[in-house]
Amino acid sequence: MKLTEAISSAIKKADKPKRAFDLDIIKAPVNSELKEFTAYFKQSMRSNVRLVDTVARYIVKQKGKRIRPILVFLCAETCGGISESTYRGATLVEILHTATLVHDDVVDDADTRRGLASINAVWKNKIAVLMGDYLLSTGLMLSLKNEDHYFLKTISDAVRRMSEGEILQIQKSRELDIDEQTYFKIISDKTASLISTCTEIGAASATTNVEQRTLMKDFGENIGLAFQIRDDLLDYTSRKSIIGKPVGGDMKEKKITLPLIHALQKAPKKESRRILKKIKNGARGNDVEEIVSFVQQYDGIAYAVKKAEQFSAQARECLRPFSDSEAKKSLLMFVDYVMEREK
Image (cartoon, rainbow, N blue to C red):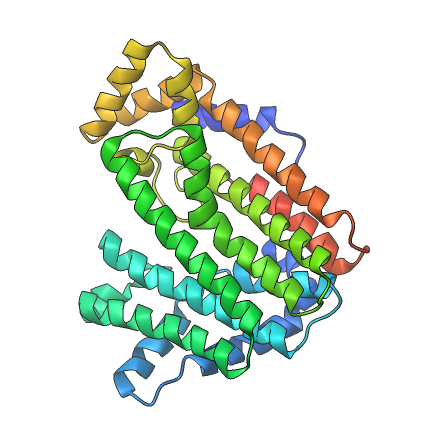
C-alpha cells in the first residue's frame, strides 16, 4: 500500500462513523431559488461591450458547485425567509468569488478552470485582469444601485482580508517562516472570510436581528477554517484536493500548512531543518513522499484532523439557537460534507 493511501486509511479509522452527504441533498430546500438565481447571475454580468459580454458568457459556462450561493440561500431561509435582497446578496458573493478565480488564474498562470480553458489562456492576461476588475466593480455597483449598504460593507471587508491573506502567504512562502498563529490568520483571511460573508449576507437579507447575523457570520468563519484545514490535509492524503490540486502541490509551491507546521514544531530541530531545506529547494518525487512520512511520524495529520473537528463543532454550536427547519438541517449536513470530503 502506498504511503498516501495508508495515511488516508488511518484518517478514516480515526474519524467518527460517517455518512455520505451529497450537495444535491444539501441544497434541496432552496433548489427552486437556485434555479432562479442562475438567470439572475447571468443577467447581472451582461455588458453592451461585445468582448466583455462574450467573456462573461464564457465564465457562466465554467459552472462550479455554487457552494457560496447555496450557503446564502440556506442561511436566509434559516433566519426567516428568502427575499429579493437574498438574490442580490448571492449574486454579489458569486461575482466576487468569480473575480478572485479569474485573477488567481493569472497569478498562477493556470491553463484550465473547471474543465475549460481559463480566461487568461483564451484571451491572455491583460483581458483576464481587466475582466476580474469588471466583475468586482459590477458586484459593487449592484449593491450601490439597490442601496444594500450592509452588503457592500461586508463584501468590501472580505476583499481586503482576502488580499491581505494572499500577500501574507506569499511572503511567508518566500521566507519559509510560518507558525500556527500565522497559518490561522492566513486561512481565516483567504478562505473563511468569503464563506463567513456568504453566511452573514444570507442572514442579513432575512433579518435585522444582530444576534442571528453574528451567529451566522461565526458559523461561516468556523466552517471556512475547517474547510481549508481539510483541504490542506488532502495535500497529504488524496490524489487531488477539494479544489483540484495534486498531492504535494503545497509543498512544491513552498506553502507550509498546519500538518507540516505541527510536525516541524514537534520534531527534533535538526530533522526539521532538513525537511525545510527540501521544501526550499522545491520538493519533487521522493522528497514529497519523505515529507509526507515526516508529517505522519510527528502526528501532523492527526493534529490537523483534531483542529478541523474543533472548528466544525463550533460551527454546529452556532446553529443551535435557530429553530429547526429543513434549511438548518441542510446547514448541519454541509458541516459533515466539508469534514467528509476526500477528493
